[in-house]
Length: 146
Image 1 (cartoon, one colour):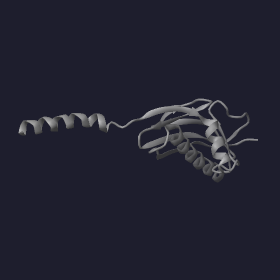
Image 2 (cartoon, rainbow, N blue to C red):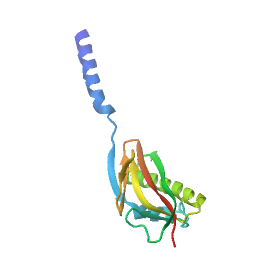
Image 3 (tube, helix red, strand yellow):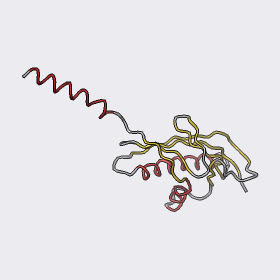
Image 4 (tube, rainbow, N blue to C red):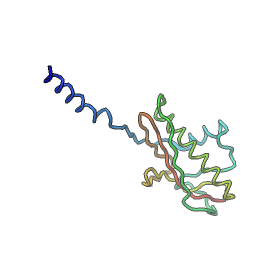
């Protein structure tokens, strides 16, 4: 009996590392779609425009460089895309508030900055999703555009 107990305990302990490994799936998703969703729902008021790296309008006057934010959201019972959208919308709200406080009307040269690793794309943002949490980190420059 004692032998069976030890064998069972050993099997359970061997299974734990596989169970405890957190999922961290990287997604590259359409940025403009999330901006449109946040604008349509009223989360973004339209007073600040958002431009990914490579789409910055000419003549943008940078007011403050390298402003960053990192947002996480509960991903439980949500699709990865849904949780990522929610996290990016939270990040955009923070950037909108920072731009307004600085007297800017745009956030330009936006890049993903998850764990301080830059990902620049003119169409997509980077999001990391797990079973419990999803996170987005972005940085950009606050600017005045015409």
